[in-house]
Length: 296
View (cartoon, rainbow, N blue to C red):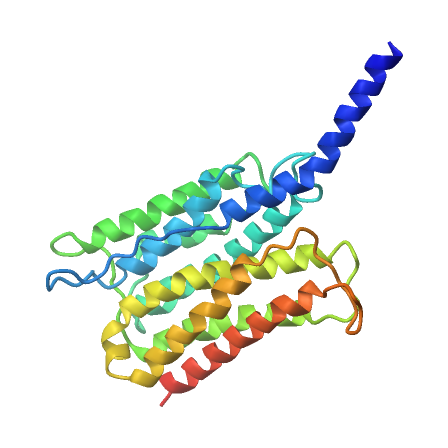
């Protein structure tokens, strides 16, 4: 009996030691996302709005259909406050950036002045506002899947004759609002990462939430480049800025230390918050420059 007890303890110890490495490996695989953008082909251009909606839907679908699914509403021991909190906080950051992107899409990119809102985008925006920690009545997953369907219906509506959906209008003044919204998100991320005295238990939560911001913006930016390709083709400086923003966003989105350390400026340990902030600040500065260029 005593031997069995020792074996059980040994197995539990091995599992406890292996869990962080398994979660780390699974996270690195999950973080990779390949969005299929609709590009001009054979002289036929994508319908304005198609790529933006497709990218937004793909980002959320990936979080729901990944190997671990939607984490923030999981129950212990897999809930957001225990072993899987890194992915959970990253998904909360992804959701926040996606909410802002779809809101601007609905309020500005597809609407001018007294125009009516697109019904499918209103529904998608509302469904993305569901509490990410609710697991029933309704569950977060059910509402977010409905948002994906709303975005799909929006794309389908763009292709009817006459169109039932409102396309992106292509005006710079509305694009400025999106760039400003993304800049504000990264500004929030910079402020969180640059705090001098965060709680030890908040360090990795902040790190991965901000990483979620970068993930969403990194995959939405190519969609914006396609949507506004005519404007970018006539303004090389603007096109160059959009090209340059991709590298810091992608690096920010994919940095995955096994343990998020919070070493001091002269410590032998890394300060991963500040390391991530380098890329956040670079991307934010590029967004600021894009906004300046759009305002000319």
